[in-house]
Image (cartoon, rainbow, N blue to C red; front, side, top):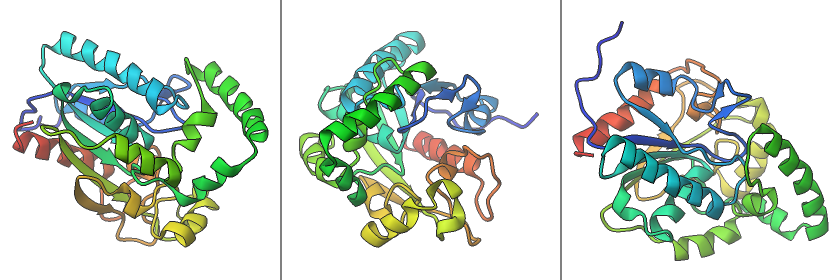
Length: 270
């Protein structure tokens, strides 16, 4: 058995997933790959947000508020550290700013979160409402079967557009007393991840470097710590950065990257 970490976190860690997935899909596919297991092996308790895959930012933030209060009651801690991926970072920011939960959050680390939206998602905003609602109905039904309580694909997907992000950022400024830091991930070629075979080149043309879904520039928020990619030709996709594939990339170990995040938080006294 590996030795446990020689550092201590002052506050518990809450992990918030992004759009289109749940903490555990089909009951056994963990959104965060090997990361929770490594955390637990090192004595770091893992807490999940329990949000819907396609819930709106507002609805998921309400779920997070209850979840955080439950964690604080259970652990007797005063605050938590949040690690959020993709849209989960927007939900956390809404929670902190609009819902005035800054007194319960010590830090927010966002991974590949589209803080400034995605240009190609502006197209979705311009689609006929009737067509969008028709497609959304089937997405909502499917994810309700998977466990979502209030799926709202229509609203949730539109909230990823660049247009929406302008209003969102104006209404949700950073709160004093909360440490904000961010990371971006980046694919190197369109074939780096088959899931983003089409989206990567489209976003590359409109937003520049990206991980298949989130532009690098859009991921920058607060203390930007850098772009996470590989030394090889593939790079790291939007799914790769959360260790969904459990792949050992050239030049970077994803679970160890997350251990580095919590180690730095502990060094900051968080």
